[in-house]
Length: 137
Length: 497
Image (tube, rainbow over all chains, first blue to last red; front, side, top):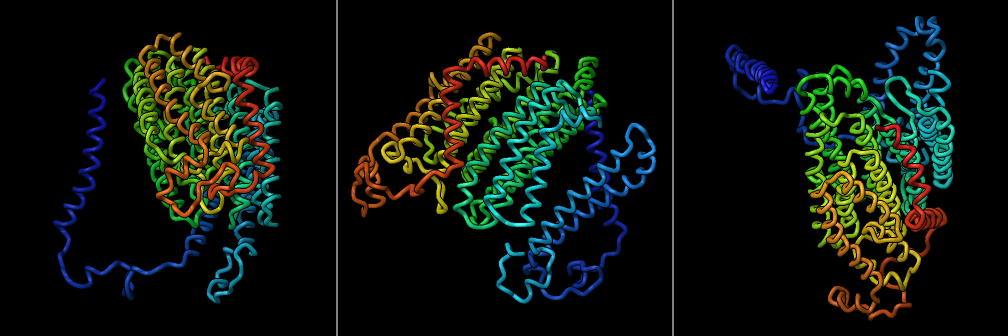
């Protein structure tokens, strides 16, 4: 049975060859131009301005989090919407498919209501440096 | 999903609904008392709904969850512990300023994770329950976010728990590769059908890493003292009880289904883990000066004791495990409950010196703390004694001589540090002042009646007092009269084997 583990090693070896072999092949065939531009951080073709070491606004994080939540919602809702009609026609599932989808959306809606009320969606609030309490929303 | 399914899942549904309702309440109106009350109502309703779910047991919901007597017993345990933590948290958070309300959403979610875990009959629900529990705990551990210690603790727990989850998932993948199923019962049947275990054995060994991390047994215990120390005291109580108890319930369910042939290699490993946990936990606790860290090391040892009964892999062993876990829940919650009510918003009452002469200042709290410590040490008349007795009996019955003798040795070492704490609480304040005089020479030796510098927390709030009174009752009640609980446990673990 221990011979089975040979598969694992072959698999690991294959993975290593694919990664490092690819890099090695790339180094063989790509042009080598050394200079200032090659050392700059890649910014989607834009010329970088200043250093990358500065503080990001913490609200990027909140917005990204909320965005992620709704991105995931779409990922779940799309397949649900796709099969909903067939599920409703099916006697075994029936209305439950609709109920479960609605429950899912409602739970996310409560989350949105919470974030909204908490004031995390108001981008402008922070710029004017108003001393308002985040708990007031 | 039929009506029966919904009935069987009612504790889970109630707690999930409570979490959403609390979040909604926070968005409508921020009020700490209302939030805590709603949370408590949700948890109590969850407890009540268990008796409703019990009318349809045993019931398998899809292949994912099972509601049998065993799952419901552990659900009740998890919910009861959550009720206690909720009561303790209210006064604790009341002293602290910012954003208290969200804590209750996290508490409900973590409880929900525990409920999913104890009812899991499929690897998917196992992982889902574990992650719901863990993700909520990540935030709870770092809840006092203004302190740098909280952030450090949160990051430590996040990274280590994430890594252990990765082990668990990879282990599941290997087991799946071998057996082609993720459901417990077919999986076990597959395992006994195939010749040689192939990838399944290393898979299950990897899964034990994830499980061992949650249980904080020896090779995976390093996070325990750090997290126990850095987390707010009620959260520590939650991590020490619910998170470990739910994981152990799952481990027991899985191993009880596993045949003796497949389980043996893993049981050998778990035997070593148990002995190492008992010795390391007790020895490391000997020199500890911080009471939260001391209880962390002691909890490592206690999980080792439970594993000894687990190794017996008999019906009596299952009962002993369950009773010991109940006793451990009660004693640990009582100990951390006292730490919680003594803490104030400046710092936690975590130094042993904070407890010097506590008997003369706060006699009731000191008595409860003594009871909890004696129960953890396994002294007769407390519930811990009955638990330890059952564990030893199960070990002897299965002729596990080596683990049982290590358990006896560990308990003897353990007595020292539990009793040391009791002695500190009994000793007069003068003695403390004499030894501490170098530290704060300005203080005159206080007579027992005088209020000391620490802890200052004036009074115990109603909720916390209720929780502590209940725990005191259980500590003594289950120690003197364990019969009824034993009967309940006996009938609830019977579906396992």
